[in-house]
Length: 430
Ligand SMILES: NC(=O)c1ccc[n+]([C@@H]2O[C@H](COP(=O)([O-])OP(=O)(O)OC[C@H]3O[C@@H](n4cnc5c(N)ncnc54)[C@H](OP(=O)(O)O)[C@@H]3O)[C@@H](O)[C@H]2O)c1
Image 1 (spheres, rainbow, N blue to C red):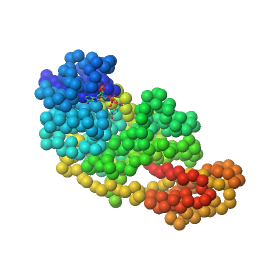
Image 2: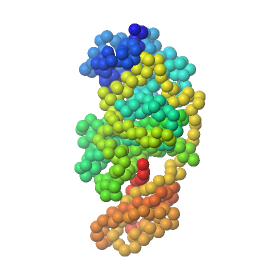
Image 3: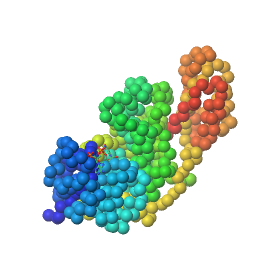
C-alpha cells in the first residue's frame, strides 16, 4: 500500500465537520478509490473547546491555521474557513508557498484571487482544487475540465444559490411576498441572519465567475459579472410569469459574445418547458451547452454539510491518485483575458410590469415609448378594470439590446400615468 495522504483541515464548521465525518465513515472506500489511505493528520478552528459532534482526537490541533499550513507532516491543506481575506487567504497562500496541495470550498476567495493562486500552485507543482466552491455537491468543475473537455462551450448557466431558489419556489407555491418568505427561510436555517450575500446575488456571482473561467479557460473576472438579486421580485410578477408560461429563477449565465465574456446573475423568466424551470427548493442545477455534446444538465444539492463534503473529498481523491487538472482547465499562463461583455450590449427578451392609471390613451403612450426606442412588443396583458385607479399592465418584448430597453423604460417611467418605477425581468429562452 502506498503512503497515506496526510490531510489538514482548516475550519471545522458545517463543511469542515461534514468532511471529517465523510473521511471517517467512508475510510475503507476512500482508501480503495484513492489507492491509499486518506489520513486526517491535523485540524484547526478558532475554539478548541467547542462541541462539534465529531472526533478529531487523532489529529494534531492548531489554533493557528497558518502554522498548520507549515506542518511538515501534512500533504494537503483543506481550507474551509471562508471569506475572501483574513485567515482563509493567509492559510491558502501559506500552504501553496510551502508546497502543499490545497482544496478549498471558498468561492469568495477564489473569485477574487483564483488566477493568482492557481499560478502559485503551478509554480510549486501542487494542486489547487475547489469543486465544492461551485454548486456544492454537483461535480460540475470536473465535468467541464474532463468529461466535456473536447467541446467548445457555447453557454453555461445555472441555479447557483439554494437560498434564492427556496425563496422563489416558496413564493410561487404559496403566493406570499418576498419579505415574508425570506423570514421563513431564516427560521428554517436556509438563509443567514444577514442574507444580503445570497439574495443580492453576490454568492451566485462568485460561483459564476469560477464556472465561467473553467468553462472558457479564461482568467477569473469577478468584477466583470453583472449582478442583480431577487429583492424586487414580487408575488405579482411570479403570478404573471406563470400565466405567460414562465418560471422566475435566479440564474447565473456565462457565454462568449462578439464583445467578450458575458457573465450575468439576475432573476430570469425561463420557459416552463425547460428542465431548469423544475429545479425547485434548495436544489441547484447547472446546464452546459457544448458544440458536440449538446445540452448536459446536472442537478443536486448545492450546499449543506454532506453534499459539500462529497465534493471536497472527491478533490482529495484526485490528489491521492496523483491525477489532477489545472485549476481553470489550462495552465494559468495560457488563460485568455477576454474583456467583459457589457450588460448594455446584452441582447435578449424582456418582461415589463407597470402600474398605470386606468385611463384611455395610457397604453398608446407606452407603445409609443417602445416604438421610439425600436423595441418590439410581443404581447401585452391588462387585468381588471378600475377607471381612474392603478392597474397592472404587463408586456413582453422580442429580442432587443439592453441599452434600448433601458432607454424605453426611462421614457415609460417618466409618463405621468405610470405610478411606480417599471419592473423589468429578463426572459431567457434557454
Ligand atoms: N455551508 C455550506 O453549505 C457551504 C457550501 C459550499 C461552500 N461553502 C464554503 O465553505 C466554507 C466554509 O463554510 P461553512 O458553512 O462550513 O462555515 P462555518 O460553519 O461558519 O465554519 C467556519 C469554520 O472556520 C473556523 N474559523 C474561523 N476563523 C478561523 C481562523 N482564523 N482560523 C481557523 N479556523 C477559523 C471556525 O471556527 P470555530 O468553529 O471555532 O468558530 C469554523 O469552524 C466557506 O468558504 C463557504 O462559502 C459552504
